[in-house]
Structures are given as C-alpha cells and as structure tokens.
Image 1 (cartoon, rainbow, N blue to C red):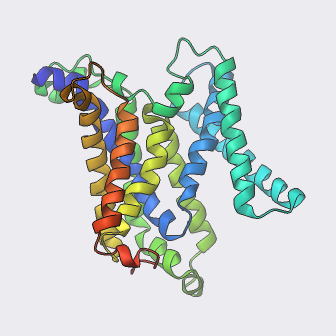
Image 2 (cartoon, one colour):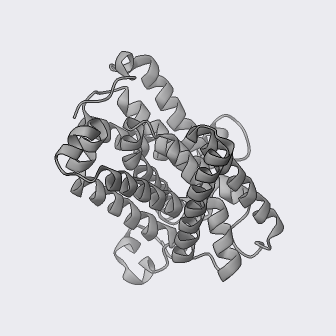
Image 3 (cartoon, helix red, strand yellow):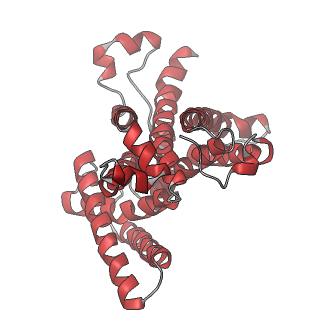
Length: 308
C-alpha cells in the first residue's frame, strides 16, 4: 500500500499542492488590487505561446515554454492597446477580446499540430496530466532518501517545487512594498516606491507560476487557484498576513481533498471510473469559497480592502 501511494499518488499530490500555493500567493495581491482576472488572462495567453514554442523547438521544455509565454504576453499587450485605441473601447473589453481570441487561436494550433508523441493537446491544456505524473522508481518511503531513485521523479515536481519556493521568497522579500502599494498607491509613491515596477513584477511572478503549472495541471486549476483560495481567505479575515495564511491553507486543502475525491469519490458512490483530478480540485476550491461566502466572519466586509 505504501509503495503504491509513493509511486502513484505522492508525486501528483505534491505537484497539485505546489501549483495551488504558487498561484494562490500572488492571487492575494491581485485580488486586493482588483486585478483578480489577470490570472485568468494569463492562463489564456500562455496557451498559444506554449504551442508556438513547441512548434518551433519540437520539444516540451521549461525555457522554450517560458519564452513562448513571454512572447505571447508581449503580443497580447500590443494587441490590447491597438484594440483599445482603434475601437475606442474600455480596457476591460479590449482585454476580453484579445485574451479570448488568443486562447481560441491556441486551441486551433493544438488541433492542427502533430502532438501525438507529447502530452500536449486540447484536453491536456484544460485538465493537465496530473494523474499520469507517477514515480516508477518510488518503491516505498525509503526511496525518498535514495538519490538514484529521486532522479526518476517526474520533472514537473522539482519544477513546481522550485516555482513555489521562488514565489514564496518573492512574497517574503518584497512583502512591505507589495503591501503598501496594494493598499495606498499614493502613499507608496511618496515613500519613493516604484509602484509601476512593483505591479509589473507581481504580474510577472503570477505569469511564471501560471506557465510552470500549466503543463502539469492545466488551465482549470491555474484559473481557480488564482481566485478561489484568496477570495475565500478574504472572507475569513481583514488582516493581510492572516489572509495569506488562510489562502495557503485553502489551496493545500483544495489540492489534497480534490485529488482524493477525484480518485476515490466515484468508487465510493458505486461508479467504475475516477474523474479528472484537476476538475475536482477546482470544484473543491469553489465549494470552499461558497462555504466562506455563507459562513465567513468577514463576508459582510468583503467589498472593503483588507487591513495591512
């Protein structure tokens, strides 16, 4: 039993946790800045960038994916400005048009590309391949101390662990500038803080988290984790430090409970097949948000900004 858990369930479970936390941390500040949908936008933009990088290089690798997603983001910025100026419409509408069009273009590229020999297709883009990220060399808990066995870990696991650590370090190191510029941008400017640069850095960190998570868990979890855990945490407290703590807890709970329910829930109910882990994790995060919306102690003040 322990051997099966270590090889089949532990890696995807940890990947799901790391992805959820990496997206939830910047999601707190995006939510308080009323930019929560940037996470949704990023998940739409990265798809054509990742597909384009694959078509150029022929491989699924971290750096080509990052560069492709970055190029797609730059194109999106240019297109948004062009649509806004030429169409004379509000920025939100321009964002919606561009991000929807780019995501649709990415789906069309996937359908027309030969991706049969790699884990890259429309279903993969939406749901990821979390269930397939098994550790064949994991023969038990002792394998966690075996360096040769550790080299056989799915590459998504160290990638997501490093991304989660990097996002956590960014949040910790730049906590004060992030907090001040989030709650009072005018005061932050008087203190000499580069508010524009801080906002840009936050979006870049969110984009890095989204790109790293996209390959393993798909766009559904990325979108859900940017919004649901921070929003649920906001309903539990009006203190930023506690909100971040609550959001991390909700992200971990969503990943663990969602993964378990996806694999065993249908069997408990008498069905023969498991369901998508990514879909169930996102569903659980939505249920947690709904419960917080009904019973959270700060639900009456959810529209007001949190305290520093």
